[in-house]
Image (cartoon, rainbow over all chains, first blue to last red; front, side, top):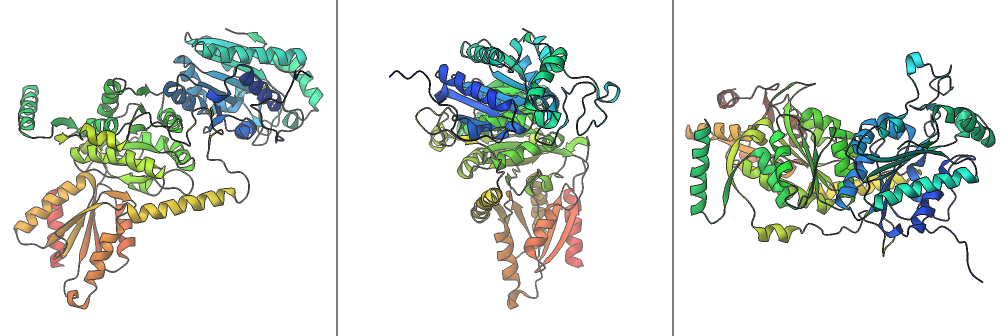
Length: 242
Length: 384
C-alpha cells in the first residue's frame, strides 16, 4: 500500500504545554511541515523567543537557539551572516517582537537581513498572565488594563507589520489568520513563501499570524476564533502588505 | 604634532627592522582588535562610544578582509546578542564598549554565561556613575568581577597594563573562552585604549597552532544534518534542573579559580609595603616602586592580571611567610591603589583575611593617583 501521509519529521512526538484553543500549536506544526516539504531540516536553525513559545525547541526536531526577550532578530542576524547557506528563522510573539524588541526588529528589517520571521500576534502577554501587549485593542481588558486599554494613556495597537512594510530593505510582509482549513492553508502558503524567499536570497520576509489566546481573552476556543474574525482582523486587516 | 607622529612611526619601523619579530605601533584599542583577529575572531558587533572608538574603527577596516563579519549594531543590547548568535554558530566572536555601554550588555552577558557560550567582551572603562565622563577610571571592577548581570555566574576578567599586554591578553582571552565555554572580559581603561606603544604580534605559526577559523564546535547550532539537533539555551524550567546546571557551572568556576591565576609580583620577598594595582594604575605604581627602591625603601608590587579569578595564592604565600616567627618584626602592609574607591580593596582584604595590614589609595571620576601621591602614602605608612 502506498503511504500518502505520515508524521511530520521536524515535529517531535510529544504533548505541548499550550492551552486548549491556543494558536501556537497550529503554527508550530505548519513550520515543521514546511521544513519537511522544502527538505531543509538539516540546514535550518530556529531562533526561539521568550514568551509562551520559549520551549518551541522541545517540540521542533532541528537546531534551535534560544534568544533573550526581544533580541531574536539580533541573534538571528549573526547566525545568518556567519552561515549564509543555512535557513534561519525567528518565531516571536507580539511583546517580544513589537515591544521590548522593537529596535532589533526594525533594524534587522532595515538592514534587509535575509531572514524569515514568524510573528504571532494574540494581542496579549500569555506567559506572564495576560497583561497588555503592544497589539492589545482599544477597550480590551487585560491584567494591566483592567478597565480596558485606553488610547489616552496606553496608546494605540501598534501595527508593526505596516511600519516594517514601509522600509525599502524589507522584501515581503503578510498578515494571515489560521482559523479554518482555508485560513490554515493560507497561513501555510505565506510562511512557506517567506522560507522560499530566504532560499532565493530575496531578503527580509515576515508573516504575522493573528492567533487566539482563549485563556487570557476569557473566551472559549470557538469564541476566540469568532472574535479574531469579527473584531481583531478589523484592526489588523488580513492580506499582503508588501 | 603630525610630523612628530610620523617620525615616531618611522623610528619604530626602523627599530623593528633590526629585530627578528616584527614590531608595529598601535593604540591599545587597535592592539586589542588586532589581537582578536589574530586569535581567529571572525565576528565583531559594536556600538560607538568614547574612549574605545578606535577599536570599532579598526574592526570595520579589518574584519571583512580577514574573512569575518562586522556589524555596527543599533545598540549595545543588539551587539551583545549578535555576539550570542555568532558564538552559538560556533564562531569566535567579540564586542567592545565602555562603561555605560557595558552596563547595557549585562543581561546578554548573563545569557552567554547561562548558555555556556564563549565570547570576549572589551570594556575600556570611563568614569561614572551615569554618563560620567570620558576620562580613565577603574570603577567597573565590581561589575566585571562579581557578575554584573543576574544569576550565579562569573566571567574570566583580564586586566592589561600595556599595549603589548592588551594584544597578548586579548589573544589569550579567546583561548580561555573556548577552553571553558565562558565569557571573558578584558578590563582596560581610557589611558590604555588611547596610548600608542610598539608591540610584537604573534607569528602566523603560533596563530594557526592556536586555532583555525572555521573549526566546527560540536555543540553549535549549524543545522542538524547527520547528527541529533543541538539546542543552545539557558532555560531550565523544571524544579531541580537549574540547580543541577548551576552546580555544574560552580564546578567549572572552581577549576578556573585553581588554574587561572595570573599576576606579576616584583620585589615582594623583602618588602615592607607591597603596592597592589592593576592595569594602567599598576604602571604608575611600578614607577613609584622604582623611585622608592632607588632611595632604599623596601617596596614591592603585585599586579593582578586576572581580576577574576583573583590571584589569591600569591597573597597567601606572602602572608603565610610573614606570619612565621622569624618575620614577626617586619610587618607587611598591602597598599591597594585604584582609579576607583575601594573595589579591588575588598578582594585583597578577603584574601589577606587579617593576616597583614591593608591600606588604600584611590581616586575616581577622572582623577588618577599620581606617582608622588603613591610615594608620600607609602612613606607615611612606613613611618606610621
